[in-house]
Amino acid sequence: VNRDYQTIALEQDGWSVRVLDQTLLPHLFEYRILRDCDDSVTAIRDMWVRGAPLIGATAAYGVALAMRADPSDSFFETAYEKLFSARPTAVNLRWALDQMRSCLMDKPPSGREALAYARAAEIASEDDTLCSAIGRHGAELIAAAYRRNPERPVNILTHCNAGALATCGMGTATAPVYTAHGDGIPVHVWVDETRPRNQGAALTAWELGRAGVPHTLIADNTGGHLMQHGEVDLCIVGSDRTTAAGDVCNKIGTYLKALAAHDNGVPFYAALPSTTIDWTIDDGVADIPIEKRHGDELAVVSGLTDTGQVASIRLPPVDTPVGNYAFDVTPARLVTGIITERGVTKATKPALQEVFADLSKQD
Ligand code: MRU
Image (cartoon, rainbow, N blue to C red; front, side):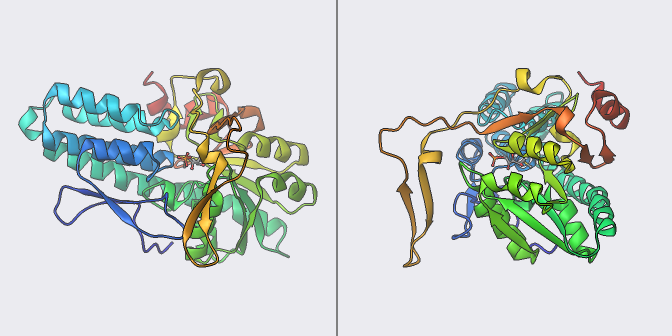
């Protein structure tokens, strides 16, 4: 996929970090510069960057910025804690911070800044590679669906944005779509708008449009109806954390799509790199803390006015209590398969352990 934007990159000065501010998309395209660790915390917490793999890469660069300011052990620990608490669900955050810890902590402070920048750059470029591998494996599923029904494009439903914008590469859930599209397979994506923050409407629609992939935006409640009428060939979603047993935590509403897919015999896949697997837990419903965010994310909607201005309006009565849950857990039994960088595997503990024997022993 040809992308003319980067979600995260080192600036020309060789030390500050440029991120695309995703809170402004799709109507405004602006980069922001991160100059210290606190900037990185803000970028993650306020969702200038979002999506599990990109959160990890931003945290890694946050540590590099911290080491530039002060390479001491205590400064590292403070940076680790601040970044770790910026968002609770995406396990790539902890993974990236632990990578930084093992790369830096047994080294003399004088060398840590350079090492931290090098490891952060590697984490970003490794993510790009992981996304491409996910794309290659997932595209085979799309190709197979096309062979079964070559009369029409393959209809893929996705939820939220697990796209290029959520990663340092071509995305997780979108990678198979971009790869299949690049291979000349006709595809069409049903894009869930994804309340409360509308990452589907604002981000997935934006990046698919920019890449020339045919797509249609739908209200979140539409998927079940489309599945009943044979209009969805497969669902592919991303994940923010997946347990060792294959439970998939993803943007709120994913579980309902999986239930509808199950009821209608539609294959339901989660596409994720191994960095999103939390090998320390099995039971996603019991063990994954679900982020609750400010009610205004649900109550206040922003968009373009008729006069071309970006404006925000409040939908419910001003004093309505709002519950804003960011994620839910889809139990492994509802997941047809997990598309990883090493292939498509069953959503079971033995299957994941077999494919990732080297990683799953780390707990
Ligand atoms: O809250 P966000 O926007 O950071 O949520 C993350 C997501 O975009 C999704 O849940 C996504 O499908 C998984 S991240 C590749």
